[in-house]
Structure formats: C-alpha cells, structure tokens
Image 1 (cartoon, one colour):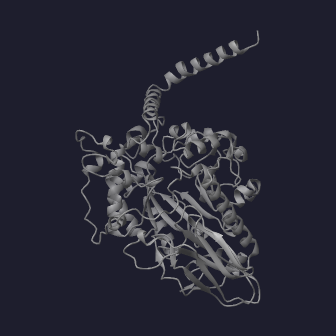
Image 2 (image 1 turned 30 degrees about the vertical axis):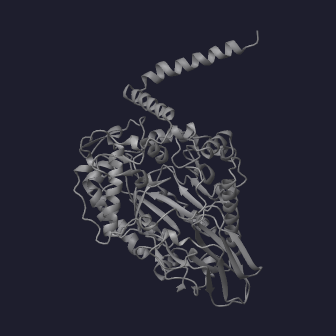
Image 3 (image 1 turned 90 degrees about the horizontal axis):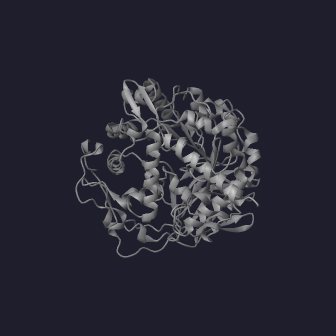
Length: 605
C-alpha cells in the first residue's frame, strides 16, 4: 500500500492558499507499508494499518538525510511494549511505546530505501478472538521528509510523553514532564449574538477579566516554552469563535510545522470558502456545535442560520474529499429537554452529511447556572433543560444502536473515564447499575427518552467482544491506573484561569501562573488522592465531571461523599432559586465573622 502524505484532493486548496509550502510538506516522499502490514482499516475517523510482529517500510532512496515520522498505537498501558527500528542512522533504535496514539520520528540515512520495524510483545489474541491475524501495533500518518526542525519537535514530544507515562506508573505527584495535552484559548469573541442559550457568556467574560482581550499569537507559544514544545495535542477551549481570528492561518501553520494535533470547536456559521480552504488537509479535529436536526429547533438554541450552516458543512465535506480525510468533522449534539426528540433525526443527519463522527456531549450539569431565554417562541431555562441521568443513559444507548445501524461513528463524552454501558443499561425499568443496591424497588414514571420509538435493530449486530472470551484476559498493564489521568496528562491554560482537566470547575490559578500551577500543592493533592483510589474535593465540586457523576449514580462513591454532594447541590439550588440570598446574607457574613474571630484569638496578647 503506497502512502501519500497528502491526498490530491486536499493538496490543491493548500497550494492556492499557501504558495510557499512548509519544508516537511514540500519534501515529502511516498512510503510503502510492505511486508508485515495488513490492509488499511478505519475506526470511523483515523485510517490505519495493523503491523504483525515485524514490518517493512519501503521508499525511494535519496542522496540526502531524511526523517520518517508516523503515529503508532500500543494497546499496553505500562511501557512494556517496545518498537525497534532498524536501518536508521544509528543502525537500530528501540523505543518503549506509550499507550494509545503517539507520534514518533526517526532519522533515515542518505541512500536508504527501507526500514525494518519489530515489536517485542504482541497484542494478546484473547482481545480479538474472532480475528485470526497476529497483531502487534497500529500505524497511521506515515510521512518521509527532510525537515530536521520538525523531526526535533516530534522527538521532543515523544520523549516527554514517555517520561510522563513513567511518572504515572511510578505514582509520582510532582512531575518533571510537562502535560502531553494542552488546553488553549484561541479567541475571546463570538459571532453569535445574543449567545447560544446555554452559554454562560457574561459569567465567562467576567471570569476572564483583564485577560478577555489578550491576543493569542506565536509570541504566546514562545512564552509557554516547553509547555507548548512538549505537547502532542492542543485542545481549544476558548469561549469564542476561532474563525473570527485574523491570524488563524499563521497559528495553524505553526501547529502544523511542529506536528501538533489540534481539536477546535466552531459554531460553523462562518465556514466561508476562504475559511474552509484554511483547514482542508490540516490535522484538525473540528467539532461543530449543532445540537439540532431542524431549523426550528436550531432557532430555539441560536438563530435562523440553519440553511446556511448545513450548506457550509456540505461544502467542507466535499472540499476535503469525504470521510476519513482531514480535517475530521465531529458533529456535536447536546441532549436537552428541547431537542431530545430529534436525537434519531440528528444521527440520520450525520449520516446524510457524511461527517466523520457524531458526538454526544451532555449539557454541563450545574445547579448554579440561572440562564433564561425566550427565543423563537421557546422559553429556555437551563435548570429545566438538564436531563435526568436515566434519560442520558437511554439516549446514549439509543444513539449507539442507531449510529451502528446507519454506519455513523459515535463518540459519547459520558464514556470519559469508562463506558456508560459498563455501569448502566438502558432498561425501561430505569437506570440499572452494576451494584445491586442501585436498582429501584418500583419502576419510575416514563421519561422523555422513553417516548421515542425504538429504531430498527442493526442488520449485522455483533455480540460484545467479551462474550466469546472464556476466563480472564492477559493484562495490558492498566489495572492499577487511577480513575482519571487528566491531572497527569493535561493542563488548560485559559483566559478564565488554569484548569487541571477538561471538566474542572473553579480555576486553580490565574492564566499567567500555569508553570507553578502544574506542580502546585493542589495539583499534587489531586494526584495523590486519585492514586489512593479516591476523588479529591476539587473533583467532587466539579459537577460536570462524568467520572464522578457516573460513580455517584452507580453508588460507587463512599456514602459520606455522596451525602456531601447532595447537600452541596441542595445549597446551590437554594441559592439559585432565591437569587443568592442565603449566600450573600448568611454564608459570606458568617465566614467574614469567623475569620475576624480567628484573627482576634490568634493575635499576640
């Protein structure tokens, strides 16, 4: 199979927009995944090839030194699988492989026409009993080029990722590595005015304070130093629309030059032809917030640009050459009271648009949000739009069944930290959890999700993988991993403050203090608690965290923590429903009085 770094349909738009190609693109050469590799496959987004225990990469020789880069996926969580590359400038290189997809780059000497790859450990067949192949690792995005700076950048990321994994395995709470995943804040302005009905725009801008209008430029990346240089992936978490940025082209060029994978969210309303050409062929996961399947429902959430938006998406899919080519389009649906009836239609819309993936992203659970809007004849009140957990379970299972039937790749963000189906079923008797004490004695009243007709069963439904496996499977080394690795793997440097994870509640430090925040006493305490199998108070206060929420619903949290969370929610609801009267006139005055009393008693006499 000949691998071309840029499919023809994606190269031409880049040439029109950027006549001077970066060196890694201008010098790219085709690579053949030859002996030892199986045919290309797809997981719905990424196209990859499995390698058996050994594999051979072939390419035309060149009189100059070059660099071969690729992304490799190891199934092992403990750095116990090693990849050896023979034929490089140092004859043989061996690397311990980080779990999941990670980038690698190796030097290729002048005159070389192939490299030999080998792994010292196979993926245990017990994990794929119906597949007779011998499987080692997966490879994707194979590229051969002459760009030494890019090679150095990717080698730095690879080394930091391995160091980070070593520190996780060792149970370190003070880290020498920097976060492999970096949350960034590209832009602070938005084109949707008034804002989307579920967006806490005013509150967010208040939180951002003096940072609200701080520009994000190449200088920002230089100031971040190793935090940017060592990161593998960038996740844009800005409260704003990135396509409004005048310097977006420049930043995308820098991200591409240094081999970063970018996740970016957009409302899609200004995906003009020019903006489409900026991103076609770029390694971007583009999340498009849609949340509706009809113009009527979309107008209740945002505005009347539905037809324009859908047209933009069709043009983008056509420009990039369909599914499986960058940028990868993720169509986002946030189940709420006002749109849950369109869940089936949304899955069908994702299939019709030929997007790469549909994403279920629950509305952030919070008892403090007091948003109220009247839009397109609909009264949207945030607290009433939050679905009961049982409805989220049923919506999750329902979307999965229909997506499978229609061939739509689905990502459910409630699966973060463990699949919903591992703890809950979508039984009509309610949320059935694994622990026996979670089952309800009486069937609850019908919920919103139960009023939807069931989709047709999949024509080629397959049994779960574990169903055909007898006895325990061989270890992959992740049994002792903490329930959440975010405080080791990620840091979010945002205008509203530094967050230790994507679901973090309160910022742990101002934006400019990200360096000290990474190993601050609070971050160390959070890591330490997770290592001991417990959730830190910060985690329990982060109401949107799906890991905590699922464990609470499944009665897997200690009784004391469940009680504290229930009291906290009741207090939040009381404050919200009484315009914060208890907080302003009881809690804050009492806290000030206690502080004053402590100062009096601790003062020298």
